[in-house]
Image: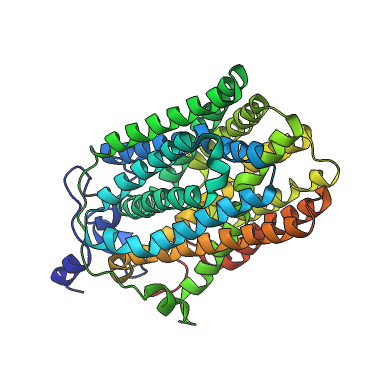
Length: 445
């Protein structure tokens, strides 16, 4: 391919991002990996703009960590209804999926940073709505799920595209490790602070305070995002990209889509159910905050190890051990669901999860960056990836709703958790071909 043709497919990075990182780093080698110009590429530090992107990501996760779990507890205390929580999550997942598909055009053709800012500010608006609704929030789960999904969808769509653009196969695992450390750090401190505040105040006052704090953190994240360099879109968005690629029997993205779907199945239910079980087992928010503190501390250590030592050559065996561990930690629930077994599950999950999510995330984005044609359609590939995740989350949530509609006993919920909690095994089976080497698979997808 000529230099002129490459320039049409790969827009230059804006000022503030180093030219030796990301999708524009040099040329593409014959095997699909990016290859630097001149001497072999050495490990480069993350740029100041990349650190700023991580800071915005950290503020977004901190805002959710402050109140995310407690929103579900707030709704549970209002209705004591598992199905209500399931429908809130289902509406959120449908809203996210639709947002990814529709807003892909905005991110592709216009300034994607505006989409990221809109996501942060709409997420702030979600907590403003919760504050306005107060104790009647349980009657408006459809509205809350819709707004929450819209804000999250806009943020993660724009963030994932920019993340791809400012990292390369050599720096992607490190970026994910740092993001995991920031996420675990906020997940460790924020819920503990929230649980402490709620337990020391009257019911409504404590909740209104933490929802207000989340609103403030999101606004701060929105302000910080204005310091990120502008990134203009290029090209035309292909509305039919996902179904066209899924119909290609020879494409690697068929398996990748279903791997993302399998990953989402567990996330869709465990994201809200574990926190509720901790609250039901202990009866107070402070214990839930302590649970988050302990498990996130374990996750912080594990993400540090993963970011520092987990290399692409370790992905195949490392991920297999991780998914086996993620399945085994569910088994103590069949003995008894109590705070102790929930802690075993939480600490075990925190220790294993980085060695599962880091290779899944890094490998999927490595495949997008394999050749210029894929790079030019990076927004569509991100949409395809996120649609897979959200379809999986929705399927998991619908399975939860179906289960609790027939029987909400401890045994039925345990069986459901084991079934959907084993889905990472399917992710490994579908992805093992790509985990053997970073460049495995067909370059054309």
